[in-house]
Image (cartoon, rainbow, N blue to C red; front, side, top):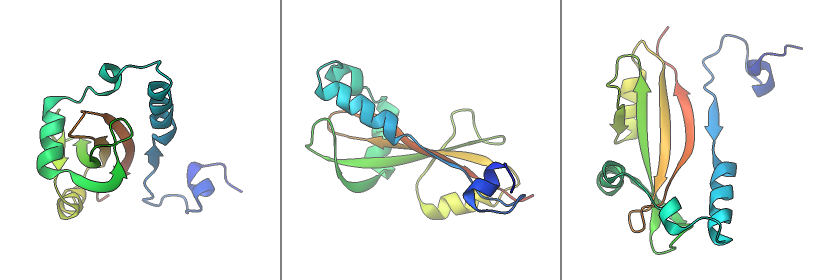
Length: 134
């Protein structure tokens, strides 16, 4: 039995298995605090204008209602960060683009943010590593 993370996930050592970090617990805590009145709408609905623009233009709409206003569906926006990318990252507009960028030599990190374009709710949903060639 190995105590490496790969062994826990059921993968062999040295595989390109990318770890996914899910921020659902933090999200649920923020939503709970908002509904209890401990956080105001201004505290939780603070999306940057560029994030809102990306959500409107290239965001992927989900079936889930916004947990704050319940007036619109949440949209997902994905950003890639890596060694040879701009410091502000790249907003990924499609799965095809993600696949194309992942074929590079460097390992990239993808961050998926959920955004409500009506009330400006935003929260980091998950992040994962996109393994490049070795």
